[in-house]
Image (cartoon, rainbow, N blue to C red; front, side, top):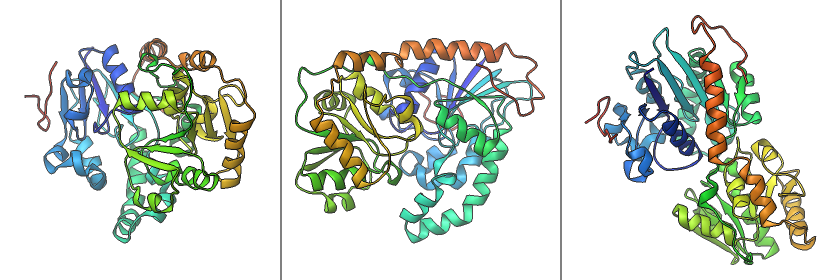
Length: 384
């Protein structure tokens, strides 16, 4: 069986790319297709595989891919995948929009339907500049229509959380099997004693609500370290002297800060959210907003605290409870909880799910249905 793995864009190593790594381990001979790639930012495992990029790569897509959203449907549909029997798409940006062979199996592992054209479209619109707002108004309806249409090209969906599975039903009317993504337990280790700072980590975008954490810790006059790239100038202006912005860090540096922090602050609504599990793998509790994927990873009162509203009052109450109640968040218990999501367990669960789906025949035609529980190539369309 010839296998292709399709990812949206390879410009760093975050949760989606860790899932792609696991898929590449499951299918060592699979070819990888993506819209654009920054090969210098990929793991050695991914760099060792055959990677095919779209025509967007020649347009400077690795640097400006976010500006090229209207061209992404055409770029995906330009991939010739007729020689592949199994196609597994890894979806958060557009990826499932490829055109499979009529008798091929197409399975989509969905990290999230595209947030910026669905449930977070108004949030992105309100935080954008005038030109981007015009672009979103003109292209939004067309992109949503294309996105729903391409869902019919998928035989089975796998969702990374129950929260995402519900959104798949909301937007596409498709059901999905849930297989939680992996945390690489071996990359993290507890520190003997936590230090006197809290940590907020992730790409700085509006929906992650890092501004809420900055506001609360400024008013509490407590130390907060913010790790991640993005629009920080406005945040820096509103931040007090106890807030430090470190930008992007290496995996090793990130693991060090996770091990030394008092707790991780996670104020956004995430589809799953791998960073809370990385904090627990480092022996540290989490203060998280009680919506989205955090409800599937953070056990209130056992591995952290969930606050009810995205408001300064609600987050402040949770932080003060973390400070003064002296609950027993033993590093061993936290790490044991994170081990339930370890990469080795993920690969076993994913393989079992894929084996079940692949044994389901015939492949076509397939109506809406319930799912059951090398070397680098840097040119467009062809390997060097």
